[in-house]
Image (cartoon, rainbow, N blue to C red; front, side, top):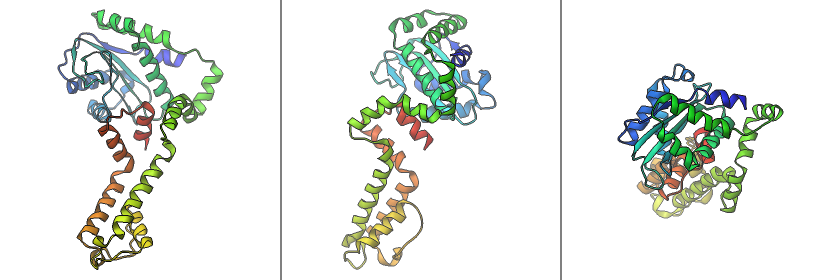
Length: 297
């Protein structure tokens, strides 16, 4: 499609990059991105901050000597795509533990979700081919590297009619849902329904908090608290409303006050943030769909 061809024609490249670690790679990416015409008035510090935030959600080192750092910014109107090679390899916390030699970065506008995912898909499909990585590593000049990479991207652009393209631009979020249908089915088979995830988390935290607040150790009188009052207090704390049917200072013990404080902190920090942290802690990698939902929430 013409739009993607125009984006890929502006790819920036850097062969034989001198990087010793992951932070150094991200700084170099921010430097390279600042020279791209689409970056506009966005400062390289903002780009670096966004890349670092994305990497905290899970390493973009996808294995096989490849890393795909990416992020989205509100200030951008177009995409910034770049490729760099590090023949000696650099530690990037890749999922296979191997050093990364080919790094492709994508920085896109936050509002162009379907294009963002489409470009990620195209780049991923290109880099999945071993001969592409080998070819990129053989290039010694920026012009050669840019042209070789651009040609591979052009060949991978899906054929699409103009009518379908117009439908996609009008229904961006619908296209996003369709493009991730396979992933949604996998999540459903696992018993995870993303649309209900937030509601379930809220309900679980509120019910747990209500139970703890009902226990005798939570009140100064050492007696059970009525469940309705406890549910109201827990809901108010998680939703950070400030409403209360019981005087926190005079009714609740130190333990009860700590429970309320924890519920307030959980609600203020955000359940999706905590959910992401727990997924990372148990070793689950965030999918592209998870990432987009979390960054938009």
